Amino acid sequence: MAVRQKYTVADLLALKGRKQLTEVLVRSPEEAAAAEAAGIDLLCVEEPELTSAVRNAASSSFMIVGLLYGFHATPEDYLRAGFAAMRTGADACYCAGSLEVIRRMFAEGIPVVSHVGLVPSRRTWTGGFKAVGKTAEQAIMVYEATRRLEDAGAFAVEMEVVPDRVAAEISKRTRMICLSMGGGTGCDAQYLFAEDILGTHRGHYPRHSRRYRDFASEYDRLQGERIAAFSEFKQDVATGAYPGPEHSVGIADDEFARFMERLAV
Image (cartoon, rainbow, N blue to C red; front, side, top):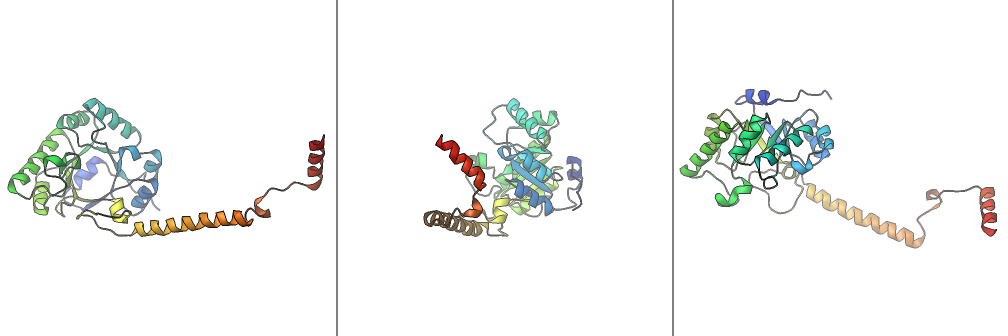
């Protein structure tokens, strides 16, 4: 497979309004490799899961590392975390920190992706896990937050669960790349988590998600196979079927005889 040219921030900004990009949050080297093989444009990985193995598995992908909100208190904390991520191979950092934090990171040349709409770490201010921007007042609030982030130096912003028409109009009015997570097609990229695409879990799936596979059922099947295999192993030990001669190491008769002689001394 031919190695593709990895995007730069300048490339992404030049694509605004010209192409719908795709973004997937991955959590393992296997998911990162699969996303790159599928041609996904942008990968996101949370800070603790950024390893050289994940980076090497998708070496040609533009990788955004999510700096965990609440784990970093000061701009200096965020800067240290951002530089550490960049040293490990990040191309940009997701940051839900303050405008001061974003300005500091921008001043040091760290590309920043931020967040408007339903921001999970700040959901109590907007009413919990629900859409943000369904009233004119809220929609203006989302727009003004977007403009402040652009002024602070962010190059991209995630628009989560914002009404599609609102998100489209805001996207037209910012130079930032707008990443839609439930924000409709008027944004510049469509963003989903790998676990939603793959269907890895039971229970609630967000309205904006779409399951393309049912890994949860496959995991259940594999768990059944694990139990069956372990049960068969236990039974074989009990009946003497394991270990057999093919699982043991032999010794020549003359060597064993000498060994026995030494034991008798």
